[in-house]
Image 1 (cartoon, rainbow, N blue to C red):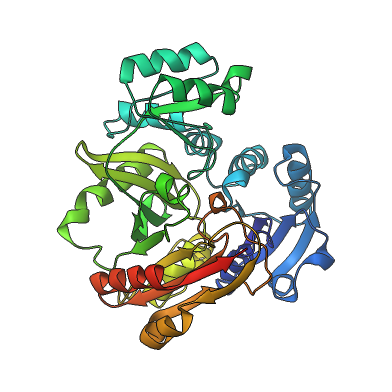
Image 2 (cartoon, rainbow, N blue to C red):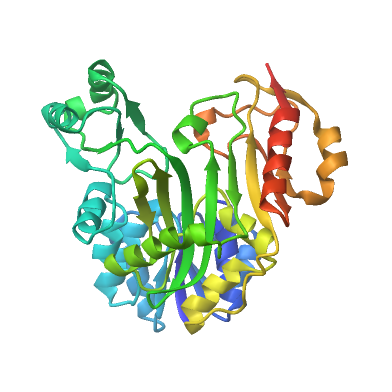
Amino acid sequence: MNIIFIEPSFPYNQREFVRGLAKAGANVIGIGERPREALNDEVKGHLAHYLQVRSVVHEPSLLEAVQAVQEKVWVDRLEATVEAHIMAAAKVREACGIPGTSVQTAFLCRDKPAMKEVLRKAGIPCALSTRADKPQTARDFAAQVGYPLIIKPPAGAGASGTWKVRNDRELERVIVESHLADGVEVAIEEFIEGHEGYLDTLTINGEVTHEFITHYYPNVLTAMRERWISPQMVTTNRIEAPGYGEVRKMARDVIRILDIDTSATHMEWFAGPKGLKFSEIGCRPPGVGQWDVYNAANEFDLYHEWGSALTHGRPAGKPSRRYAAGMIALRPSQDGRITGYSGLEAIQSRFGDCIVAAHLPPAGSPTQPIEGGYMANAWMRVRHPDYDALRHIMDTIGETVKVHAE
């Protein structure tokens, strides 16, 4: 099977998707923005062919490259796993008659107001939301729904470019900061109080084959704005527990309504005083290397599972569910350059057998803003057979390990 994969070397873990396809037996053709000689030897070893384009989101360039491949071989699939690449890939896929995620599905999984409108009509509980390209639209929505509100780009991912607005004064400030005052469109929705998590799947022909549920501690907006917090994302191995039944059903309903066929998915949700609420979904894998957490927790290769789903239409194995696993971000004390760490030896001595991966930039490394995300600075991945014990370990790491900077 000949599968075109968009941008095989950047970001870093893109090479794992290429490996997964090759391991499943696919003939992998890469299209990317770097010259072939800039790819590492491992990536080049998995690629049967490679084409360079000016930009993988410039649809005419991508279309020309895909058509050039089609002139030489039959193309069975065209795949992208980065949020920013999804729509361009879908449009070129459709133009070239290649099976996969449709333009309509890609649009609904990118445009948050349109997504929620379709899902609300189908009975999925969502936050009240709208789109606005004029300040008065935002003011009218605030008057109707009340505060707090969330304002973000319609196609934003995660907490990127997101504001929480608590009153009229803050709304007027965000109208300027978001460039809504200049006519830039934003998505506006009611703030949902409650615990935040996500459910990721590998779906084949519309049926969930693999699924994983992860909890945020604390919720993302807080985590991305408070330096003192060492935020965690923790994946449960208790997925069959009765309390997860409702969110698992919601995920399947959303996948059906949005007509997601064979794809990875990433669905965010809230659970609180107003019950379970859908937040958003992407027809792509999660970011921040989360599939590596799932692999550590389940002792299998999710990249190969994805490759097998696309190449053969079936899974290659089963997750063990032996471990709960998580990632904890460790923030520097201030912006500047890292001067060192404290508490590492104590943590290694107590929990070294539970730490499966870590990134600890050496002294002298420049720090990154906390808004850069969970992997912007230092981090650790940890696993343990018991979810509650894992939570204790990760709390202890956050309280003990300090990243010093000046």
